[in-house]
Amino acid sequence: MAISSPRNLILADEPGTSLDVTIQDQIHRLLNEIVEKRNASIILITHSLGVAREMTDRIYVMYAGTIVETATPEVLFKNPVHPYTKGLLASVPKISGGGIAKGIPGKLPSYLNPPSGCRFQLRCEQESPICSEKPPQLFEIEKDHLVACYLTQR
Image 1 (cartoon, one colour):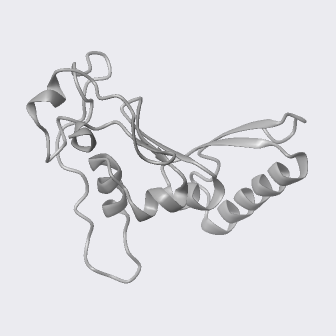
Image 2 (image 1 turned 120 degrees about the vertical axis):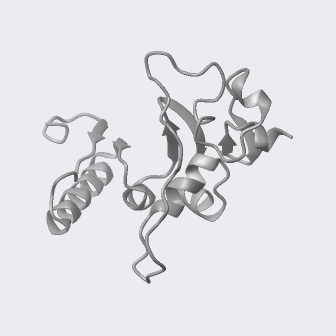
């Protein structure tokens, strides 16, 4: 439906989910082609960092409804800073081997009653007392690379 109307903004929520990789690739190529032909923009919502890396100019990593890190794909993959972003990247299976990724330990926060501080604090291996006091704000650590983590502001 998003691509059938002549809009200049396409919202694509997991456009390749539950499709085999061949069809997924065709859908992603079609979206890229439409964006280019229409001079449109796309907001791509995905759990696949590889897809985001290939299809976007900027990535916003969200945890429990909050933006925790944002940068260009090149910067984000070269220099991930937020503990959640690092955990996500470390959780991606490697085709070169190396065993099973360990995932991100800890307990998910309640969406109905989120923690008063950083929403990632219950799973963060580097949590400090300030993390439970108030949510961290996005902080620019380098040009166009913002992170919401007290570790970056010390």
